[in-house]
Image 1 (cartoon, helix red, strand yellow):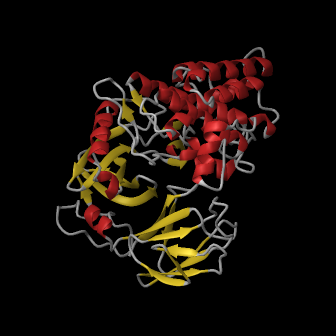
Image 2: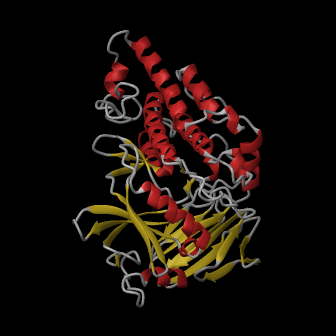
Image 3: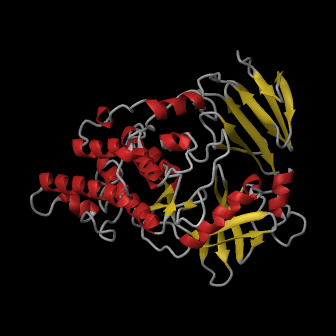
Length: 441
């Protein structure tokens, strides 16, 4: 049986925790736990979920606040598919391959019963449209990504299958298909290209360019010092993602979830590529912007612009610029602009407070670069850059000025990162001879 816990509310909303048979998942906020939750109301070691033979036994670890299931405080409970664990202000929901949601997805192969894959992910080996699904690559807040093979040309793609609850939302599906049609024709070196999309029975999916690499989150964990990486790396990656946003802007697409987990760093040349447009919207004027449901926040909240936390349907490309600024801030400081133990506190910080200046974390950070990041993070959209192209020009100015300071001629910075403004010149954020921290390899 295949199973996982998904965080459905709280500061860590969207995080996924795998559950392997014969293992125990310790839930808490301590480093010794398996979840490292950021909810301050959760005990350091709050409870544990024991997975054995298809059973999931939840045991409270004498937490002060208690462990809740179905509104009742439990000491020990056999958790079932779809049930939610409440610890502090955080709720986690159990999903198993024996549950209804997995069955609906698994039926995508032929329209018949779901295929059984006791040793692996529920969909590995199945076929959706012209794609044969291979190993699972990642799971996130909106769906599951598999490596797949296009039977027409035998090329590898990454195919994302949306979670069943998203696939049943007709308004979201209509928005999704409009964006897919607009974005399929977009070819840009810093964008994960789309190959196709559709709905097969109850399964909604889209296929993307397969990128051999890793998310920016993994890069910072692997190469950073306290998850902080060189400002030069951040600047180069930021310019590349700004170019991707500028290309989307030309297509009148708003991404709506610019965050480190949606940026891939390609292994062979370290090029940064923005992807996963599942929450994107087409703003071509053909339809009014969708009105968000009350209390619903879509995307990574820590990188969400203030106007989006207020459910403003008119939030536009400047919210993506905020996400770019928040991502740059995280790369330089090792943390998002704001952190809080509860979702309400986090949203309040985003709306009201100014982040700690990033130069407090890296004193060698150029002031002009800090100024650019802070303008991207402005509370009011009108105080940010008006378009990604304008943000890109600001970052390119920083790169050019730093190159001139380093060497009035052909600087080491340009040799490492390419000539600012040329999307093809840069070999990627790390450069050909250094790692993400700027050290020679």
